[in-house]
Image: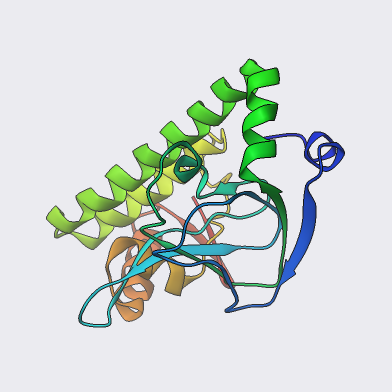
Length: 198
C-alpha cells in the first residue's frame, strides 16, 4: 500500500466499488481524485486509432493509479478499467495534496512508487524491439519477481493470466502458452496447473 488507508479515510477519503469492465477514469477527463486500490485488479490502457488496445499495466491491491496527473493540468492520457470486482479508495485532489504538504515523507514514497512504475513502462516499451518471445517473458518475469523481493528459483508465482502476459508483452496468447512450456523444458519456470513459478 502506498499511503496508509486509515490516514486516507481519516482525511475524508471514500471507498467505492467497481464491477469488472467499469471505468475508474477515462482518457481525456481531468484528474480530480487520488485513487488507491484496496482490493482487485485494474487495467491501465490506451485505445489506438485502429481500435487496438495498448496496456500499460495491471495494478492491483495496494497500488495507486493516475497519481502523476495530480501534479499537472493535463487530462488523463489513459483509461483505468476494473478487470475484477474492485474496492478503490477515492480522495479529492485538494485534500490529497494537503496531506502531502503536511507529511512530506509521503511525497518521497509516492515519487519512488511513480518512478518504479515509469521504469516498468520503459521496460514494456522496449519489448517492441525484442523479437525473441522467451527474452520478453524472462524480462517481464524477472522484473516482477525482483519488484516483490523474491530471489530463490521458482519462489515467485507470476500474478498474471496468460492473456494479461500476452497483452503486456505484445505476444499472442497462443505464443505465450507455447513459449512458457518451452521455458519449462529449459527449467526457466515451473508450471503447476495454471500457475507459473519463476
